[in-house]
Image 1 (cartoon, helix red, strand yellow):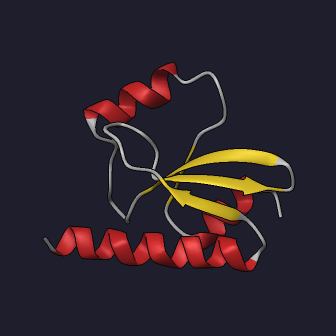
Image 2 (spheres, helix red, strand yellow):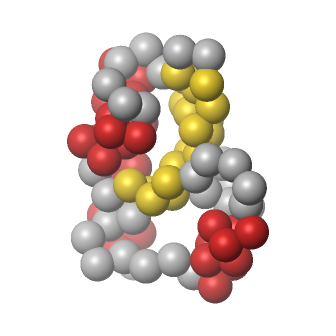
Image 3 (cartoon, rainbow, N blue to C red):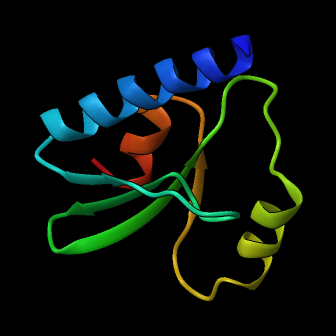
Length: 86
């Protein structure tokens, strides 16, 4: 249970930071899908949020293995900002 609270806190901080930059952010729900769909400067980004020491589930691993577009794993707002290259 505590692990979910940390993830929620990490995700909330990342979402808030991205929105401060002017990004549109939608939280996705679905087995294996990344956590966030981010729109920024005319581009779309998929981001999977992990806490320190977190790892991909089997479904997430398969998504990243087969997805032919952009997708990134982020652990902090700084990681997410680097994905956006700003």
